Image (tube, rainbow, N blue to C red):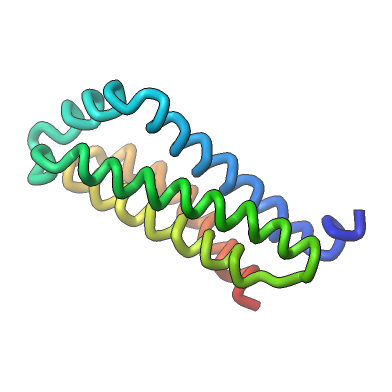
Length: 132
C-alpha cells in the first residue's frame, strides 16, 4: 500500500469528500421532487423561495463535478502523484458548501449552517494538503 503511505491524509480526506458529495448528488437525482418540495418548504420565508429548483440544480451539478474530479484526483495521485485535479475537486466542494451556507443563513437555519462548518473545515484541510 505504498499509495496510502505516501499520501494517507490526502487520500482519506478525498475519499470522505467523494462519499459526501457523490452521495448527496445521487440523493438529489433519485429524489428530485422530494428534495425540491423539502427545500421549498425550508426556504418559504427567504428571498430564495422562487428559485429553489434552479439553485438546487446548480448545487447538484457542482457536487457531482466535484465528486468526479476528486475521484479522478485519487487515481492521478496514485499513478503520477499529481494533485491538481483533486485540488480542483476540493475547491469546488468548498464552493458548494459556501452556497449551501448562504442558503441556510438566508433560511435562518442557523443550526444547519453551523453543521456545514465541520465539512468546510475538512474541505479547507484538503485545500491545504493538496496545495502544498
